Amino acid sequence: MPELPEVETVRRVLEERYSGKIITAVALGKPTFYRAPPLAAIKLLTGGTIAAFKRRGKYLIVAVEGRGEVIFHLGMSGRITVGGESPHVRFQMWIGTEAVRFHDSRRFGRVGCAMPDLGPEPMDPGFTPGYLWKILRKRTAPVKALIMDQKLIAGLGNIYATEALHAARIRPGRAGKSLSRAEAGRLAEACRDILIRGVEAGGATLDDEAFLDPLGRPGRMQMGVMVYGRKTCGTCGGAVIGTRRSIGGRASAYCPSCQK
Image (cartoon, rainbow, N blue to C red; front, side, top):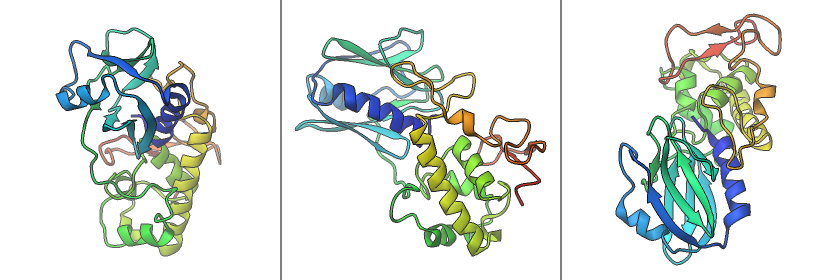
């Protein structure tokens, strides 16, 4: 799933290329999303001038001058491209003469969705060691599930949560309340640093449905991961262990030597 760095990479490309330009037309693919874009979102985009591309957590926002905003969520496998045909084009809009297409093989993406209640992003001033300690200290859920809960912290998904926990030397299956204040402080710093690195690297291009930016360029974050998608730890060289059960609905991995 595209996480904060990947969505921010998409936002930056689109902002540089299309801010101030007119959306001349929009069209839905067949089949469309599981929940088709509302008619209000289609009308808002058609003929509007793009004021800006914004982002909140994993959500991409198109601000249209004098009309409001349309929210995009890329779902599990969504990609936005400049041009580029595929059987999985669910939505497309023409900006000037160029087609910008939303490809989504699993059809979990959304256009014109409502923005849910989201917690602070790890780069926000409100995301402090004290904030993280407060949301962890009475919870029995695994710490990894907690930091991937978008209502608590916006932007972290499986890749970056896995890497942040490794950097903080904390096993993903530990109960939130088991972390000491010092460990919560390390994890807060690691969450912030891993997302900043991901943004600077243009996202991570790792798996079968690999992330590419709208111009078809891969990210570079995968070259710096320590445990995600690896058989051996990038820090100590020991074997990476996969958890028997999913955490937060996702497979997980950790280094038993580096993470306690």
